[in-house]
Image (cartoon, rainbow, N blue to C red; front, side, top):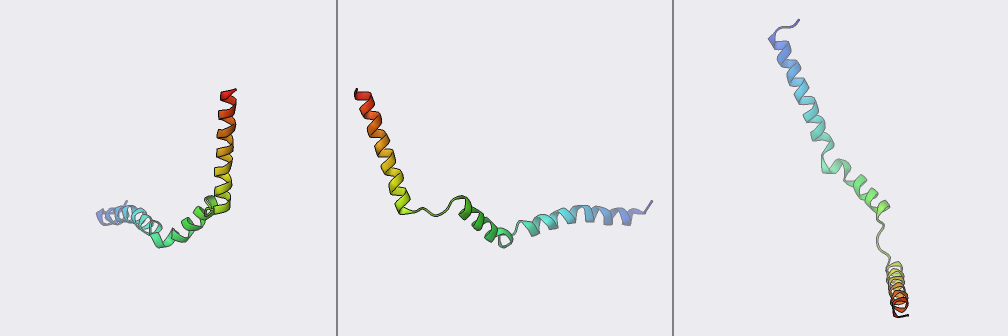
Amino acid sequence: MGNWKLEVARMAMYTTFPVALFFYFNQPTYFEEWVTNTKRQILPPENVKDKEAFHQLIRDMRKKQMQSLDD
């Protein structure tokens, strides 16, 4: 077995390594581009034409629902 200096060095490595990885991988510049691209793939920018078609569909469905309730 080693002496106390070896144990101190091992303990320093055990605590420094995870902290250094945490510091490196949590830098905003490291993953900012990746996050932006992923968000754009999942939630593409809104299209005005598609938005208006969606609202028109909602109005039509409400109108049909109100007509069925009146009958």
